[in-house]
Length: 482
Image (tube, rainbow, N blue to C red; front, side):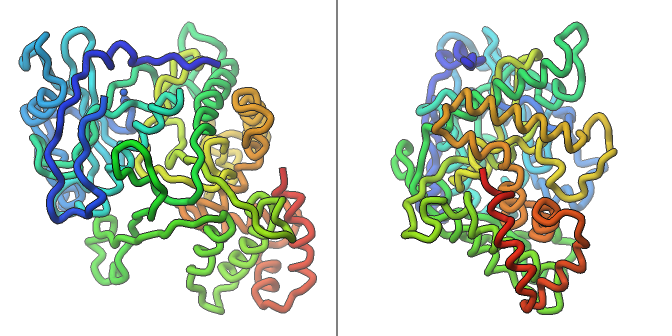
């Protein structure tokens, strides 16, 4: 399926310029980025641009800092410095009254003549009290990875016009400026039948077909390691360490800092899927009395001995050389823009935290809203119509797998797609917002149905239940296989 470019005409109107250099205190690889010659329309909450300090909590003041109070004048000054043109005046630019706000970012829309629209995204951490050198590295990688995808694939990722990793610019905050993307978020089309539009089920299948076609484009990008893309020359990346954050060790002693204070963590590169996940399993400290986590770690380790975590060609033989692919860090319906009929993906955005990953959780994985039955706190019947029954989720996963096969070809990773819900559950339990016990319980229900979780976990945690381990070793490959 061909993907239309919603911003093709706008590109010619944008004139790249250079931005300020990075603060000397920043890490060497986080150099400020030169402007690169489309975005983000929907985040969950909308507010007016005329924010004031009235009613703002102390937590919000510390969390957002001055980000919530960037002025129209500052935004227009920044926009003009980037997209200023001889064909119109600075006074022709204006800022939309609506501000789009999520949990971690704010986005302002700047409009100009001839349907010119750009968006400026600023992170909640983008102020002096919270911004770190590692954040600068991550922002640079995000922006240049988006550009790299644009340059080498047809995946509809908004192109970055400009960004700055420093606070030394017109708005006083690090930012990414992108082309505006027309369309509606998948969330609005998936759950709500549009008045006068196609039947809801037809729209859903259109969405899955066009989304598979868009994501299949990422198969063209392969890498030799797991990690984050680092761009020494703004063009050709190498895979290097990933910079993440966790809560400080003493957070319990200062509860007011919960959700604000962060401690940087450097994750090294990995050359194998099994090593990548096993390293995190081994790093989980476990009280011997914690039978649930002890059993979950054991089940997870046994799963890693199976395909696709250990490539089939290397089972019992010398290890094979793996390749890895990109993963969208929040592949969910609020980050995907479409035409109302679902036939065209107009933009996939919010690439904050993008990295290379094992193929089983990469571009071919099903989107997050089709993984609900493998996530924490899933209940059915539940919050209809926003919660699908397990059989419906399985139906859509199967359809998406076939759409991925058609888009990417028989030799692609499409064969991993349908079961990627299980692989992503393990990934989320170790590196995401899940936890290992959830994956262990879910996979146990598939491997040995109708057993008692607590009884099984307690016996497995003793380390002396050979029959239980052998049963898992025998059955896990059939459940996880493809």
